[in-house]
Amino acid sequence: MVYKIRNLKRNVVASYVRSLGNSFFIYVLVVETLSLEQNFKFYVKEAFKMSSWDSKQYLKFSKERTQPAIDLANRIEINPQSIIDIGCGPGNSTAVLAGKFPNAKILGIDNSENMIISAKKNYPNIEFMLCDAENGFEDIERKFDVVFSNACIQWIPNHEKLLNNMISLLNKDGILAIQTPMNYEEPIHKIIAKVTKSDKWKDKFPNPRIFYNLMPSEYYDILSDILADFSMWTTTYFHRMKSHNDIMEWYRGTGLRPYISVLNENDKLEFEKDILEEVIKAYPKQKNGEIIFRFPRFFFIARK
Image (cartoon, rainbow, N blue to C red; front, side, top):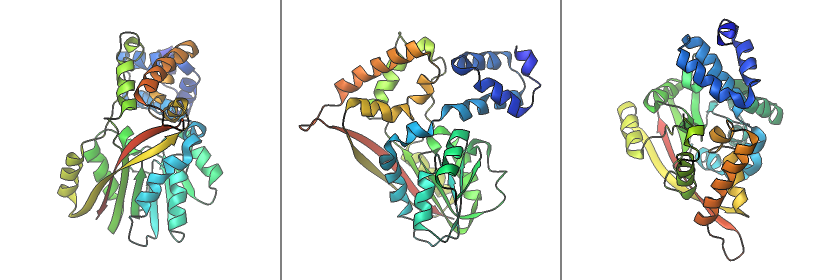
């Protein structure tokens, strides 16, 4: 089967792999084991990305997910004429930029076809395009006054290379503005790590999610080697959740996504049950029955 599809065109292979559904994860392992040519592995990887994000699930907590983008945009002190939003998702962060900088020409990019379709539908007056930041920005043929990215870079490896690539998109005196989750010490993060590495589940996830974020001190060193003017800060958001299942719903759109997307329906229900049991233990209810869901985020802004 692998031999039959190895020479197909990119869009054909992507469509085929998407059709594999839950068997895709096993199939990727076969491809990697056989060490097929690099471009074929890229097609398989691309197909996974296009099928794995769900804009509707992501937007169930649109207000909470958008607030960091608002806070980051409010720290931009220039009047930009051009902005690129890297990892724009369904366009909620791009819409924040359009509202704050109405005279700017804005481009939103994302590697998820689902997200780009949603963004174009929700914000038809903003330009969006499919683009994978991990592979560089060769398809972007212009520069920008602001390079903006909200909750995206944690999914992309090699941040030293990534930040240099982002900065290369800036005009002189342009602004790089980044936000990324920094919640590795929070209960939900530890719960997911514990459950996925347990004897019960570890064989289901031979290639668990890799977290590409660096420590703040490492970002400091990277930025100080490139630029003289930058600032960094953290903000911890205290989200109000009405139930423990709300925490599950939040993470179904992001942190749990790489795991539940490769499970069959029975395993998915059992896996989520195990996660929920730990979430209930770790997050106590307040007097009114709600739950405080802490979410630390790391920000930095730099001027070229």
